[in-house]
Length: 163
Image (cartoon, rainbow, N blue to C red; front, side, top):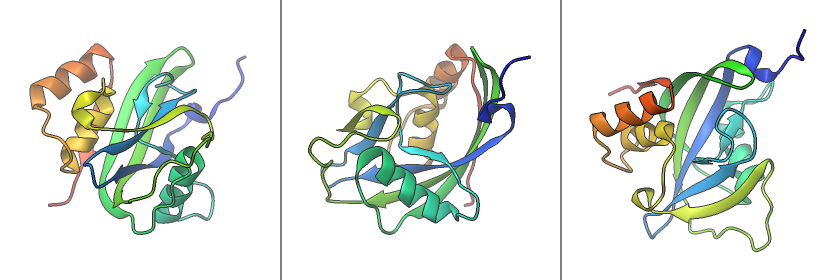
């Protein structure tokens, strides 16, 4: 029998969509997990007795060294897929914020292999981030582009937004 991982159950977490004055968005290069090796929005699991807002502030700081102060709820994103460790189901609460802060020189993020500011159109975005950024108003990817990208990576994704 294999070892248990946090992906044996629904993982509930947060994502930070952090933008600067150049209209760039903050990304981290994921070290492990189903999307390892991809440039993603910073985020992670919500810890026990922690609010979603506290979690996104902590996760963005742990992964990038940047302190966000006023995260605003954007949407809930649900992802289903499969990787070498089996199936996964993620439920991620998306928050946006703005900062003038720079990535601290020499900062090494928790569980990340890189931290960068990117224009969302200048990076090979992970399929999930295309939908998340569009729903948050930071990009205008087409339904077709998003659907084809998700399908190519065998990801089923739902985004829930209150309008």
